[in-house]
Image (cartoon, rainbow, N blue to C red; front, side, top):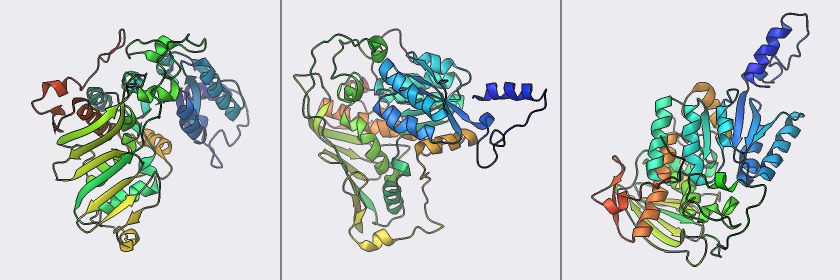
Length: 424
């Protein structure tokens, strides 16, 4: 039941004597239907369901009311989960995300699509009056700038959807570094996984009957359907993503930016070397070494072959050698250190990004990974890819968000959208 239906039903009840269950009124820890935040889901693939939909179904003050996917089989599976949760068949379905955005009874949308749809859908949802939680990253730097301006212009709540800032490991590392426990930070080392060991099969195939291929492509350049292009593998195709730097980089680069106190700015120089997939479908970086230099002198080195992050300072180091691995340090005293009441305490929400977003929808405050910080992290990923593509050192102005006297690099800040899609 959404807010509007609830109010109408309560008005009808008021006309006749009736005993209303206390749970409907919000007693005994229950949330009254009129206070539930209604959620529409756009994208119900693996992560969209296993992570995002399931997390929302566990929130007492949220109500899933509609699901959308261009793959009707995945959409039906998502509907079944929602209906089983609520014991009815009320969950609406559609293969056109615009119907989710247009529904007046939906308060917020959760976007779990391939990267090339993230900004366009988010901007359309915000203009329709919705608050938005959207998976990372953006597709280009210029799209990210448009997203930031739109969110701020319409005063909506936007959560860049990753769990890192709620994870104890990464929050603790960032606070230790920001409070000087390793002295003056000078080097950050990030390791990201390698892409799949096969280049992808580009052979055109018939479009499965359950898939709306034209809508899946959306603003991306037209290309024939092939099984290695869709679902999880969109990450390795340049038209729809930016490879591993965008997929995994958004996670660990955020912790780096957080600890370096550069989360609302960025590096001033980037250079890198790498190899790219060829001879198949995939065409994003395969192996890579990228170096970022910040105005404060800190260098961030990114290499393939892992999932860890290490901070080195004048008085020691700390690291998490692999994803969510316990923190190690040059001195156990660093790990035992307490952050005092007058020191820097970084905002987090241990309950995760979905809970944090819902709380902020109610207070209208920024969540722990707001739009501008999310955009700056995506920018780090895109800068690395551009440096790898051009094969030379680039100078970046993080204030104007342009390259310094480099028209060739500036031309890579955006990508054209396939008609009729456009960012107004």
